[in-house]
Length: 502
Image (cartoon, rainbow, N blue to C red; front, side, top):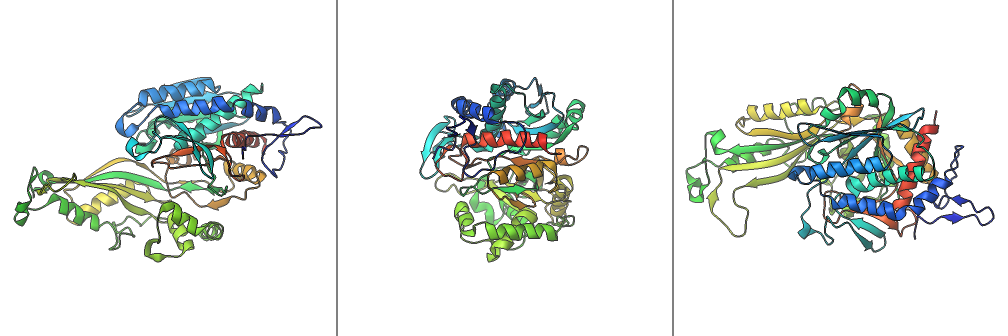
């Protein structure tokens, strides 16, 4: 089913929304000319997204970053942003852009232009080709790194601005946009962008922060989150040189009988960070400031557990059990409310084919620690360092590579209520959760000095973020799930609703 098709009123020749059973928009503006422009500009919107995906911009590899930044700036100018400025940081550059539509209300926007790494050998369609691929039972999708995280939703939002302008109109709100190129490495320099005086002054005029998203699951359902966990990304490095024991270079493994191993030293240190089953943080003081889940939040989780499919969730993750075989409601509650300590990767010595019989002089563990409200990245990192020193592992280097505090937004904030209105207009009863178990650097908006509400919004679907064969749905074969044009229409409605509500 092509969800970008329009229903035609034969008698009046009027163009209406092509979302079955949809409640008409109640505000005074007739948006049918804008929706007609979405249909007309479909191909150029797809091509714009494909061009964006074809430009690698991988902060972790310092690959294509200047080109990715310049391309994003051009796309913003093409969409109508009058001021688009590159902002230098101690890392990759950011972008500050504004669009003055002469409207009474201003909306803040967060974009990212960097993407995760990709190994082409793992993909069935090359990650930088942005091919259109038929997915059985789902529809036609663009496949490529960044397709859903975040270039697809961001491109759909820009397509909404093109459609509004194509209909001879100005956007119903003004925009202040900040973009970064280091989200996928923990946003280490994003505060340098947002906290510039001119950027803070512009953001203070906004009613809140909005980040485009492809929010629909395969069943068409949408979940609204009222925040996100914070994160610390770090490396723990054990070396014979720093430890003062073990070798200063790799030696023959027969010497393990008489020489200490930095690799085992690291493993023993890691074991102190969690409970014996690896599922509960055990860092001294780490949980002291973690805010317990509230009764209202627990009620949200209970409602979500009734409405979400546990079997589908396990299938999507490729798992058969939750930790300690907890129930589905308990698994959801843990997901949104518990701090975590996770090993992303372990590297040490020889890992190639066959054996090499060495005693490595150095071993590295890459960790991420997820934080809940009232915890901060700075304090949590300090507890990790102090814990290791107290347990006899003070020689192990702790190198934080990125991270930030949690975010929280009230359920009655305008940017959240508008989401609910637009989703319900599409006959979607959204699920609401206290926070996303993942992380984004929204703390620079929701925390001091701005204290702005922030939320993610957008119909449409995609999957495979950080994984092979990442995709964003272009033409949907599923009645409940929107393709690209349905996603674009949802952004148009969102903007007009932000302008309309009192």
